[in-house]
Image (cartoon, rainbow, N blue to C red):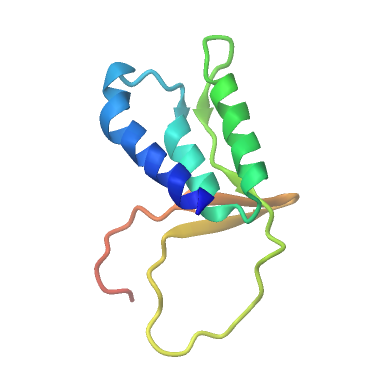
Length: 113
């Protein structure tokens, strides 16, 4: 329930209130998109909110900005065999030493190979 409320408020912000900021985010993905990905993928909602808050605080003229994908813990992944059609890939999880980076799938939604 909390995730849906936060996702709804982020959708409202992205649709209506970002017009006031004139594209002022210094990072890719934007801070609101980063928060949305954290809320959708991080199993711990408090960690997702904490990471999103830190990212928003870093988005100012004292930091260079750049590319900064969300980082989550990979402990909840388990290898499974898929049977039947493949599910739609929404995010790519890139393993790192202390967790995984989340990268959104931006490829076409056509049939998979």
